[in-house]
Image (cartoon, rainbow, N blue to C red; front, side, top):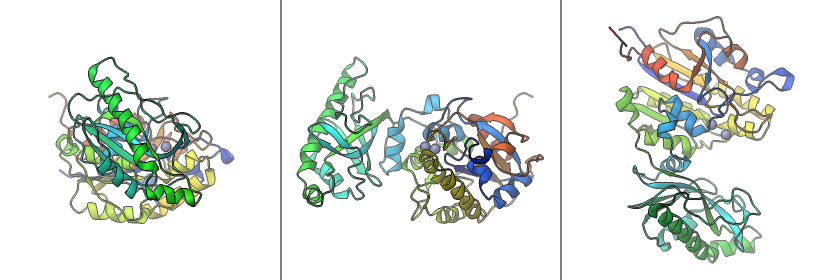
Length: 406
Ligand code: ZN
Ligand code: ZN
């Protein structure tokens, strides 16, 4: 069969936008020689990653793009985040995202503990000195971030998180959201975690030191995003494709890991606009040697969107165009360029606007579009699809879809 053999799926996180400056989107204003060349050779369309008008989270969006219905696969952000920071989670574990924070008299002063950067000693103190009524795993991540996993019988994700989400508000006392023993027990364990963490962290020398230097002490860990780790059928088992994930954010790395993909870490990949995306593209080229499917997530555009910065977003996308031109791809590789959602600079938040996508490679029909942006994508030959349609389309291009009927 003369078909393409591999797939590279490039997700420009938050890459979609609305027309603002000069009636253009950041992608329309960006310089895109490479992406426009790909658009000329390939086919374009727009995609409702979840459903029309539904603003996707990065997690549910990536699950959709990989062919996992988020209504079934998504149980909260915690499990993916915990897997992403390197905790070997198991189905049934209760996982949370955590923030090192500063509290005073039960009130949250700063949810990021003065943007603390090194929390290794604090995390080690939590690991060795906190004692809970069940097994737990705590791991620090980048910056002020961390993850907590509770493991054992009689645990439930149906509890209120302790993070009030805004400074100036009291730490939330966890309560069960369901009237059963396991939820009551889990809420009690979480409150006990909160109590012990504060007692241990507040007197640690590293925090005393921070206070002496006028910095905020990291004397609390706030929890949110509780979820039971789902059992996901491995991507390779579903598709027959040996898959790799290349990303900077714990969330996307975690989705890759929980679906059984091999994670290729990239030095200097920060998830910010200064990220080492050259290194990520090098990793894609490396991974292509013995993998059939590569998920590459590039994060910066989402951040610029949340900051409401049109120029930064547009310049970053121009930079991405230059770096993607180094992808070692030919006709035998189906290449997809898309976004997981739009993060319009005018909203500083994700929106339900469809995202543009392009598909290029052997067997792909072409259309008349020759630029990659929201405007041209809306005129593309793929018209409008949903996120869950993407994998079947790609699998069919590899000749791996079964005929429906005789
Ligand atoms: Zn995203
Ligand atoms: Zn975002």
